[in-house]
Image (cartoon, rainbow, N blue to C red; front, side, top):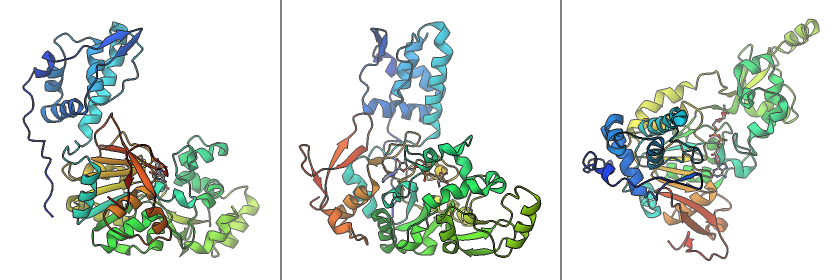
Length: 431
Ligand code: OAD
């Protein structure tokens, strides 16, 4: 497939200093700074100027010769950020460093994230991009399994908030190798919550499978450990479980590997699964010592913090990011590296679509569908005339949705299910 070009990247930028003449005034009203209305196009132009011409020229173009704090506050907003200092006297010298730092953070963010493709921002264009793509990378996270009752990690009801009473300095220690080696109990108090259900998957897993069946899936990079990619039937070479999975488990001490499901019954009772080979040694040592840590304990082959990702990730990622012609991120906060780096490793002219309940501010997608991923993929499948291998698909296909386009950003849509809607309705079947 022909690669899409960033059609506006080569468009002529306004001449230097052009923005100063037309620079609207930021004003202080009742102790609060009021930024004049900034259009999506103005934000895009400012970002493009910064990325293409560099920091010096951007500042020269957008700031007056003797800038005040409020001028910097204004161009921070112009870069698409909402400065937190709107009530402070930013023109006072004592606040200058703070204003400069805020602007610097905005500049760094813009420089390190991709520029969106301006010709790809409508729902129709996103559907078209999926229809045309031949080598899609789908990057998935915990959000695609939450409808099965498996909590995600960082939401208010996620694992990391559920483990607050374990007294850890950082909830991520639950999945930390050092912590496991000292006290595997911590992991096993939580592991039952993330155990995969048997023979169940979500419409979103079925959507990824449909992409594979249609020969469009280059690879599904999943951060999930529930192994549902295998259950839904995606071919093994089409998905990479970047953080391992519950599919197998290995003895911490003798490295004997077993099928993961063998230890599920023990995990469900929150007990420690002991390796049959190391069992007597562990018992012997425990007689003389209060704790022997993870000695002789089976650990699911999940990649803990402090462990390297599976070899298969590194074997494929370099060529996949070069080959892919569309990136779709679904149900992930993109907080964990190196997987979250994929969005910046894919060439900037390759379309990127986000399907997530919450917006992701630290990456730049062309089209973002904010809502429940099962709803979004059902809608998209209907638009594409696809049927998903999921028991609820036919019923879900009858749902009607409202798309609300955000005023603040290009290509950002909130999708909500609605029975009786007063706003324009997009029916998954009729579009
Ligand atoms: P997070 O919990 O960080 O993010 C899940 C994202 O999914 C959030 O942005 C939610 O808004 C979104 N979400 C939740 N339910 C959704 C739904 N029904 N539809 C759409 N979006 C939904 O989970 P991950 O990004 O997967 O590591 O976290 C990455 C890694 O961090 C995990 O692999 C895990 C954790 O530490 C290990 O297990 C080793």
